Amino acid sequence: MQKKNRGSQKRGSALFSYGRSDAPRMICRGGLRTAPSRLAMTLDEKVRKTLGELGVADAAGVEALFAEVRAAIEAERASLISCGAASESERDKLCKDLRDRWLARKNGILSSIDERWLKTSPRELKPSVGRSFNTLRRESAGLEIAELTRDVPLRAHAAAVDNLSAGDSGTAVVSHIIREVPGDLTLPGNRRPLGSLHPVTQMQREIEEIFLNLGFQIESGPEIESVHYNFDALNIPESHPSRDDWDTLYIDSQTVLRTHTSPVQIRSMEKYGAPLHIIIPGKCYRHDNPDASHSPMFHQIEGLAIASDITFADLKGTLDFFAKKLFGETIRTRFQPSFFPFTEPSGEVSISCIFCAGVGCRVCKESGWIEVMGCGMVHPQVLRNGGIDPEKYSGWAFGLGVDRFAMMKYDINDIQLFFQSDVRFLLQF
Ligand SMILES: [Zn+2]
Image (cartoon, rainbow, N blue to C red; front, side, top):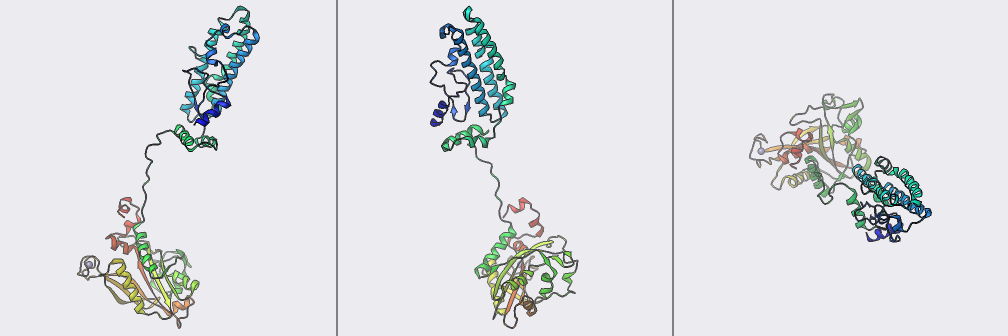
């Protein structure tokens, strides 16, 4: 700030500061402007003295004195305009202060000149003082509030900060901002609530983590999928009920919203060949009416392992390990035969009920088991469709519903809660 003050003195365009202690002073960039020291007597002091006391004895002296006054008016006016105002209310005040300083009927500089210079002037100087005073009056019309308000710009805060010179210290910039920005910067800021991961996303990441640690990779694919990848390549025949309009959302006859993440299995086989260890998380869509256990959009994770000597025992071991990692070491798994067009043999995996530890309760319908996913050895035709030779390679696959897992884990009884964006619900995670 010290440095800035010296700078403005050197520029000499002092504003409201001709040494009058009660003169309104303006804060502009660079802080308070102080009186130029080169003047022996300030203008504010001069207007309180008579021409005689000032030693003005001829017309040339009068003219020089009034020229100084007009220059001061011009300088103060120009300085206010170049500084601008941060707000309309600040502009109103600055304009009124400048106007009153010069034009106020009582104590204004022009009144003072009228009293001290004109009325008391010696007879021989009166015509010249009168002429100069009239000129001054005319020219000071630019100090009227309406004139000033029209010319003083409202400055954008950012532009004002840009105008601070490169040498300004951080303190100067901050104090400038504190002056220019309305409000109290020492108050704490507005806190915006931080969101958290959606419970389905949390569940998905937890499952992903387990398989990533087993050496699987994450793959993804399009949600708008061709009938070829969604059905044909997965060995799902034209006549299969899942291809019906009542189960599948069709974009057109050859394009669907994928009904499972399995198309990415084919895409990955084509892309990478064998061996292959991937999991495929993602959104799926089915023509289901929303209810407590159905949603037209839901989340799946599928796993696929293809290698030269893979057996059903690897599948069982992997999924048993996964269930214990996710739900705890005491969890047991049960595999029962099932049917899917894309696996042979196929199975359904149940885990011992996590609510009653297998004793039997309402959730497991007193069976002690909860069915959690489908699985099986990849059908040889599916391997072939993915460009992999079933004579050389075998593989297994599984698929599970992430939403269902999250419902189990968090004991949520309605899948709709996940997708209603009710913050009261989401805040619990
Ligand atoms: Zn149970």
